[in-house]
Length: 423
Image (cartoon, rainbow, N blue to C red; front, top):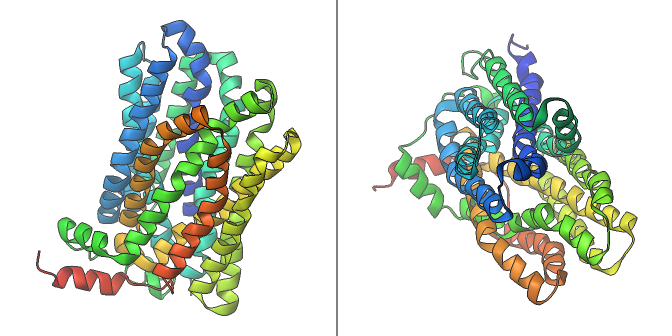
């Protein structure tokens, strides 16, 4: 028999999708409005690069801290604080008058957004039964791709009517409104949430912070998830930061055409986030095998990413967009089941922390690797990077399969070993 809170499940998932959508919308507004800001405030390309770096630093730091805090205080408080912080930071961009103010607000934006994905994954683990969890994760994180799709036309439209400062005020205000609505949602607790056996006891029994972190860092399973993000995240930043330049410089594609077509791969990403979760859950319901359901989709996705290798062989814009859409679609399948696997294994007490640790590893890897991408492109070509993008998911899948032969819950045994260990 359903209790009065069961109807909130998919509303919670929808709110999570809106949160990740806002996170990508907020971070992309500057990349579009900077065209006007640079002329008005005399901010040069070097300044803009440092402003973006300040975001990545805040993002890398808070991805882990955000995951830890959300595991301890729950998704209702943790995600509300995260969205409120980055929304206020976005709003304050509208008052910025120089490089230093933009760098400061961008850093705060990164700190706030560092809690976005750990927060939504925590909410899914708290509210959604395992049989529906992959689809819920796909919907929740898929919002980020749709935020990326909406950002360019929305920002340009608003800039025409309210100016670049007004864009930040409006977008930041939407996030603050989201926070107020979210705080009206109930906390997932044992006394009001009996959706299935996994959710029958949602009161966290989290070990002390130092023991928890040391225990997770010693865990082979957590280390595997962290390593995978370290290897793969630079590929996503390569796609975001370098593809427009690649199309323009090596394929002669105009900036106008890039602007008109580059949203298509992001749409493919958003669709695949949802589709990857849907297929995984279907396999799980038919077989009852979590390991099979997650790895089947991840293995197929790893093979599909090989389409990136062939981008360098064609001059057709249509074929390039098709190949990129295939690679983005594959990433969506992969990341949904990767994150869902973390929830499957680490449960409500540590899943956000593992997501946070792996996200920090990915951000740090990107900070290290991105400068070397420029060197490789300058001295050689884009070819090594396309090969890396097309091969590394398969390498990561092999590592994942060898290190974690079966995806199964280890949360209880891990918590017990952490508590029993003398530190």
